[in-house]
Length: 133
Image (cartoon, rainbow, N blue to C red):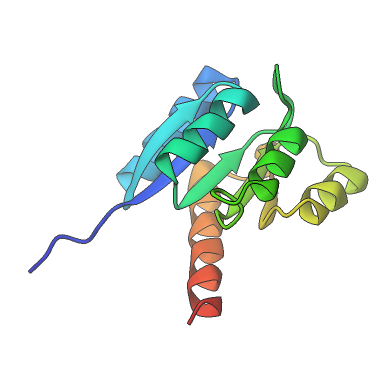
C-alpha cells in the first residue's frame, strides 16, 4: 500500500518557542513543517516550497503578517495557498482586516491549544478540498 503523502505546513512566526511548539504538534500528525522567522523569509519560502498550508503570525519584524498575507495573495504562485492567521491580536478590526485580505481562518493563540489549531487547519484543508471538487 502506498504511503500517504504528508502535507506541508509553513509556520511564519518570530517566536522560536511557539514556532517549535506548533511545528512539533503538526509533525506528530500527518504534516511536514518548516519555519520562517519573519514575513520576508516566509514569503520567500512560500514561493520556493509551495506549502499546503501557512500559519502566519501578525506581529513580526521586517514584514508584518498583514503585509505578508497581502504579498502572498497578490502573487500568482502563492495566492491559492490557504493561510491561517495565528496571532494574539484579537480586536474585531484585526480579524476583519485579516479575513478581508484573504486569510482562511483567524486564530487567537491564547484561546487555542496546538491540537485545536491543528484541527482548525485540517478543517480549512478539508473545505478547500471539497470546494475544488
